[in-house]
Image (tube, rainbow, N blue to C red):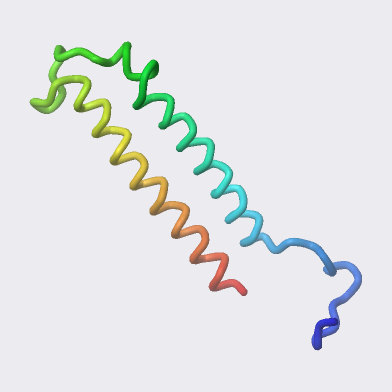
Length: 89
């Protein structure tokens, strides 16, 4: 049993920060699931071409670069949300 007594109204109620972290984690899982399909066969087939060029890169390379940058941003966002929820504790 906890040394600190909780009031019955808040006992077992998740904190708002914990809820945000959980939602961020679920959204990250969904994003990486979509990313997996988008960068491997058959998801890459519609984008497997050279033209048009995007910032001087063949389109297929730009497609993969987009997903790499997007995954870094998603991981950064999850880190920020989890960091805030830990500071609230």
